[in-house]
Image 1: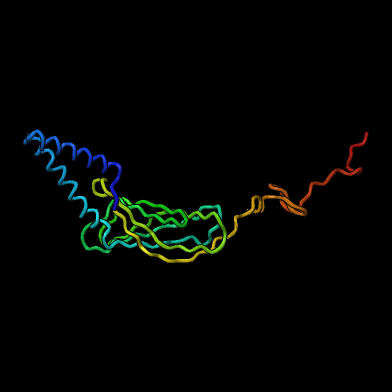
Image 2: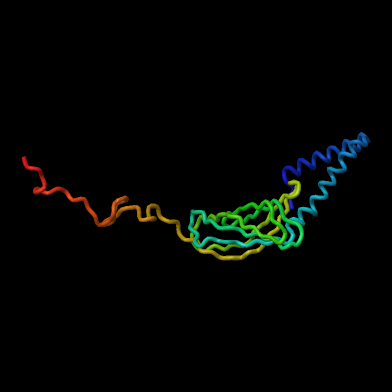
Length: 194
């Protein structure tokens, strides 16, 4: 858990109002400060409960190439009988994959698209996936780490001009012209006589 920037500003403002209320002895200020501290205390158990029991799994693309985005998906599921999960962020440092889930109903699952990016070719080990949420008030970010060990093979970066068969080489066909058919030049017999 960590306090967000908004949470730090909220905490400083609430502390300042509390100090003013205690020094002045104004009952109206105490009535204002009490619900502010109540919101601060309530968000801790609610934020922890929001992430309780959630699971996630990867849906990786069939092939991954260095320097290119490999589009896949995260599948996040909520096994709880009651209570949904809200404002979820899925993050994996290896592959720089991120995704966001607005609402996850109880006993439901959501598939959200994401992309993995790898700079180097070769075998890559995937490890920890992090679920993060600032629900309900955005003052504290709660996070849970889920171990999903996996190994993927990243293929070399494709060379430019080698895809689709659009480039012409020795003996190849030019773009837009059917192979094996050439334009025939007129011979002497077909020239008009003067």
